[in-house]
Length: 129
Image 1: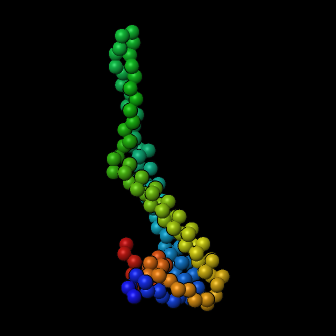
Image 2: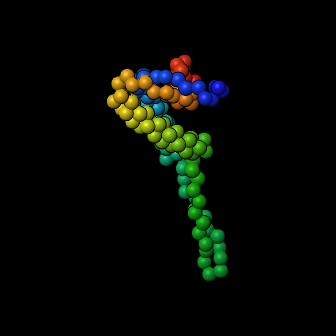
Image 3: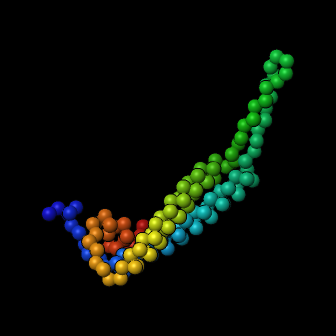
């Protein structure tokens, strides 16, 4: 039997507890990234400008409008923060739902794959930040 075929037994209450902990972690990360998005957006609002130029053409002019998005680093951070905020928010919701479902099963024992054990972080250990 290969390691990929191994299964591990965990009670529903242990899975529910681990899912709850993951939901809390992801909710905290979502809050952090939402704050980062708001900070980047505030700085972009302060530094972004609209550039309007005119080019002469026969019988008049052609207007060109361009946007300078302000601080390039904050503009990139805005997108990164939004994606991470959404990702953590969605993960928190999934884990909250998992915690509720497994929480209804008491001490029923489930056979989990190694991937499931890692998904719920049932292996313990510190999380890398």
